[in-house]
Amino acid sequence: GDREDYNEVIDGVMRQLLTKDLMYKPIQQICGKLPEWLAFHKANLRDSEYENYGKMYQTFQKIIAVYDVEPDNFPRFRVLVFEIYLSE
Image: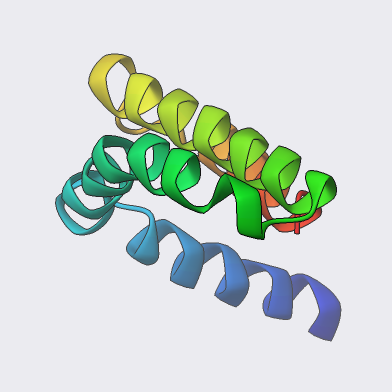
């Protein structure tokens, strides 16, 4: 009923937000800059923060790999985005 309709709407929005055209370049930029940023700020970060940023970086790299190989694999993107959410 209503819950299924809600889930379909959420999935539709997520599919639109996670398209390669929209997300690839920004995530690629983050992957290019994050290691240097982490090295520069490591002394100011708690160990847990540093570890979380490292996990996010690894997940962003996985997302880039999926975009390169399977750009329409929405279920995989959803799992990876959830991993980023959990690492915060």
